Each structure stands twice: as C-alpha cells, then as structure tokens.
Length: 77
Image (cartoon, rainbow, N blue to C red; front, side, top):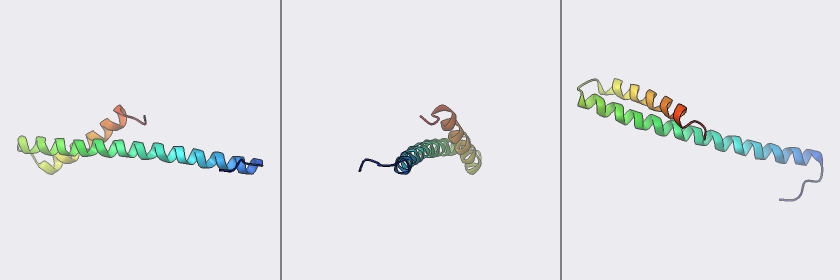
C-alpha cells in the first residue's frame, strides 16, 4: 500500500482499518453465540429425551440458555 499523501487519504485508511476491526469482532461474537446456542440446543434435547419431556421445548430453552450463557461467559474476547 502506498504512503498516504494528504489528510483525506489518511482518514480513509484509518476508516478502513477501523471497519475491518469492528467486522472481525462482530464475526467472533456471532460465532461464539451460535456455538453456545447449538450446544444448548443439543443439551436441552438430550435432557428432554432422557426425562421424557417435550424435546422441542427443552431444546428451545437449552438453545436460549446456551446463547445467553456464551454471551455472558465468553463475551467479546
């Protein structure tokens, strides 16, 4: 990349770096939340099958709890 010569080029370069950092952080956060929700879904469905409860309801509750748990425990790293 060429060295910026004026203030507008410097500003555009800083904006592109900031946007890339924000996008990467958002992708990591979404990946962590989806992983937690998937693990919660599986755990909830297994619990429901084992205890003879409604598998769909326990899976949904597990999905919500898994997503929230990963959000609060893992955070944005």
